[in-house]
Image (cartoon, rainbow, N blue to C red; front, side, top):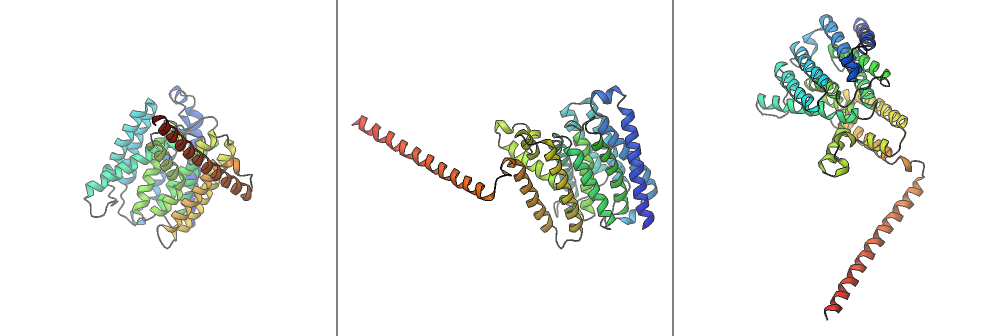
Length: 361
């Protein structure tokens, strides 16, 4: 067991050093510097190269509950390369097409047979898996709008994956790969002031974490995964609901998240960043509890309520300094004013109708 833990630590260090080295070199290439892409390129190349190296030494198909082959790990790398090239082209419709193609390759090439829909044909479930993977990969761009939100989520989510292995909840191979991704995302976070991971490259990170979700689903750890990614899922859900209202102020999907709305209302970015770190820490702790949970829904539901409460506090940060009594009094006063306004409106409409009747007479 100690040898496996040492291997995870070595994988983390290799990935950290490799990603840092790549970051220091890629900034000198015009194509990466022009696209502001060296941070993401370093994360992808650093974590992928490190993962391939450690897979060669740590692969054990009997370590998994489900029937997962080595090709389930390598097929998505082809899809990842396609998205990587599309991000260099830097056109959103090209990136979205590449994500769809990458999802098809990852599911059908990787032979991922996930029964999202019970009793449905395998082909139907595979198509549904492609759609879920595609939507998650593209939708996560809403998280990338406010820097360094995506980097923080990358660190906390991959850190949660590693911790699940430490507590014997996930296979050794996933723990090692999670360690390489954690190191790469941490390098991206350390350098986010110099190189950002923007909306146009976020599908790469979304694709990687989407793949983890599918593997976790097969390993019966999907509830832990949902807990770890709850912040991203709720932000994407809220952004989508607002987009579907077709109101002009919610027309831009990437600006509909709670974090962005709080920033636009005047809340200091450092406070938002601290809040995201706090939420990430909470999710890591509860994901470990969920690994030993009695059911699949109690802890995720509780975590969702906690995050929604944090969202409420972010949106209403101006009222945080007020006491409960002041807030209650203001609410009651607002309700009274609203009722009075409605009553006055009704009286005015009645007077207009009465005056019209008199004119007719």
